Amino acid sequence: MTSLTVSGRVAQVLSSYLSDVFGVMGNGNVYFLDAAEKLGLRFSPVRHEGAAIAAADAYYRTSGRLAAGTTTYGPGYTNALTALAEAVQAQIPVVLVTGDAPSSGARPQDVDQAAIAAGLGAATFTVTRDAAGSITRQAVEYALTKRTAVVIAIPYDLAALEAADEELPAPSAPKITDDVDGGLGQVARLLAGAKRPLILAGRGAHLAGAGPELRELADRLGALTAGTALALNLLQGDGYLGVAGGFGTDTAAGLMGEADVVLVAGASLSPFTMRFGHLLGPDSTVIQIDTALQPTHPRVDLFVSADAKSAAGRILQLLDGEASAAAWRAEARKRLAEGPAHHAGTTETADGRLDPRSLAIALDAVLPERRTVVQDGGHFIGWAPMYWNIPRPQDLVMVGTAFQSIGLGLASAVGAARALEDGRTLVLASGDGGFLMGLSDLESLIGAATSAVVVIYNDAAYGAEIHQYGSQGLTEKPMLIPEVDFSGIARALGAESAIIRSLTDLSALQDWIDAGAKGTFVADCRITSSVRAPWLSEWMQAKQEAKAAVAG
Image 1 (cartoon, rainbow, N blue to C red):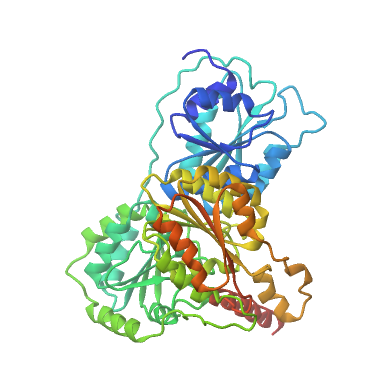
Image 2 (tube, rainbow, N blue to C red):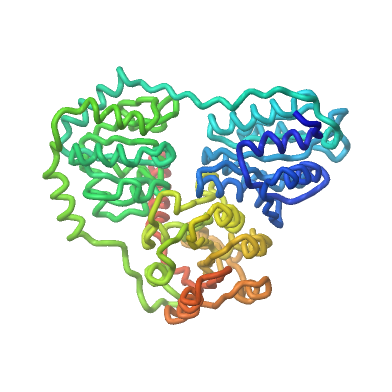
């Protein structure tokens, strides 16, 4: 290998795995960024360190390709912690390259960064002069095989020193072991005997590329299909019920509750997916196939640790005959056609502001069909998966839901915008509270996006808290946000924008799209806080039931 600094060796090894880096330059990573540029890595600057990992995280969720975030040591590192925790909780492979205390010993201003990362569940790999390359490779392989975030720490006193020469082996392919001869045979027998089978796919099935096999399996069985929000439309076709959980319709949920055998592929069965225990019937047999080592929910009756794609293919080989539940699909089609859809919203509200449901429907008709949607966390998170056409699972990037945070949306939009290479329009959905938290990176998005629409559900409040706690009589003063003119801020930073007070105001967005949809358009949508999302009502009811059970 040619002579490189320690930072250069880290960048060199990373360049064999990724092409994009997001971050903020500082003392601790300036040598790394210099080396990354010389190696041809594309650096997208963000304006707050919290955006570095969030952007790299969303880049992976959108494209399936690894990216890195980078910060300086100390305060730069601690600023990135919320996004790092979200990536760990969401099981997203991502790399944080950061400066660290000198190898000779901590300075007065240093903190124990490795201990902090460990508290979040992220492993830290601290490079040395002798093994900077091999340690970097070990870190990346760990992130990819464990599906998690890792930290690569470069001690400050080593960053610009010459690294030792190393002979690095080629990256090893991850090995997956499937329980083919044992559990999958029993799975095939249960599915073959089912009268009302349901296949529920999650993000793990999407990442495994299992959609075609699971769709074929459903057609062979005559099964109904559904997906979590992160596997939206993966199994779309005859018998598709849509999203499982609080974003789905009551009619679809009723059909899921009647299934006698449920095959769960690559889904963790979160409380939201399970409608807080009310999604599946008490007598249904629940089978889970996942790369995890054990079941992720107590409702699972049979668990097989396997790759969803290869497992579904093997089940197809083990099945005899054709669909045994054709009548089940016919009944489902009839009930879905007759049952109520999502509420269409109203044209008038008590405070005169927009109903977010009717706004969502109108936006779906206006936004470009080729769209990738990024969502921040907040009360509004259901409106996109409920009302918008989102073509593929990778076209819905929901950030903050794993760690229950808000404020990562703008940063995530930067990463998703960099990942898009096929002319799609990036659509960011955010609340006003979360948007204000990440406001500095509106400038980053404007610089990174070829075509982006920002939809701000602006209710001048922290909406979820208004519904959860304001409704109980708690003071609403800390829950309110003075009305912000996001349209004016956007124009000052170089975006086109409009305040949307009525559905007719969306004509400004339509004109921008008709003109080519180039650059960034910010739609500051003034919505009412009087409409409570169905998913939040379910959550609040579940909390009340839990309290009542404890009291009883």
